[in-house]
Amino acid sequence: MKHWPMILAALAAPVAVWTLADRAAASQATCMLQSDLVIFQHEARGFLEHLRTGNDPGKATRLQHWLEDHPVVTLRMQMRQAGMALYEPLAMRLLTQQKGLLQVYSRHGSAKAETSAERLGTAALLEEFAARIISLPCKYDPDQEQVADRAAGIARIKGISQETALASSLSALVLGCGGLILAERVARRHRRRRRRYPCPLPCSLKANRQMLRAELVDISRMGAKIRVWQLPGTPLPPPRSEVMAILPGVEEIRAQVTWQSADCVGVKFSEPVTGEDLRTLLNRSKQAATAAPAAAVKPA
Image (cartoon, rainbow, N blue to C red; front, side, top):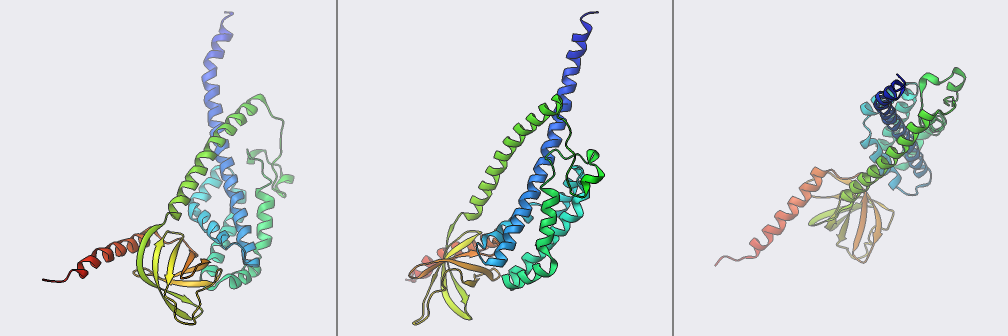
């Protein structure tokens, strides 16, 4: 009989490990969600700062990428599964505002978007969102939240047991590995978007109410290098100026000039071109390259 405690402990060990693994997985999911929400408010703040100052237009692109990577339906489900339904209306309201402001920015420019942000009270909403979401502990448990704490959005912190400490250590390890994998996936995705393809095609640039004849040199989903055929007395569009790139077979693309040389400019698209549009341009470039040698051959 004296061996029964050891036998029971041996039988209980796998159950304890399984329970800790489940709790670690749930903790990891909650921490990842809260991390995503914190990144969201950071990108939203950066976009609002760009509207005020005009600096770093890439902040609008980064916010757009975050919204594309986090569909509303998926985000709602994740918040409910993590027990964060209390904060869902605030998050959805801010998310809807940011989508609307990006549309205004894309169609009418930063001045109109800034006016819309002031009218909607976006800055105050961001402060409220940050005060309630960022202050939550990583392992947020709505069942342990007290009424007095809900006003500030801060969960009550209890003493840490040995089991909780072990689960937290496992969570930190898993979260660290997950963070490295996520960072690599994001970096790989950015590299794909920035990969440039030779694409010699005739095109046009609309700048300062002037239409400039040009030729596409190379292109990525994020931007392009364009050679401009200058007319006497017509300068190239200067850096930071807004232009419309008119490329064959696709819709006009709003862009900003990032650099300028003797006869070329580099442009950064306001929104990444779709994969379908990029394939259309590359196919047209191949067809033009194939047709050129055939046209050069004279019949006997």
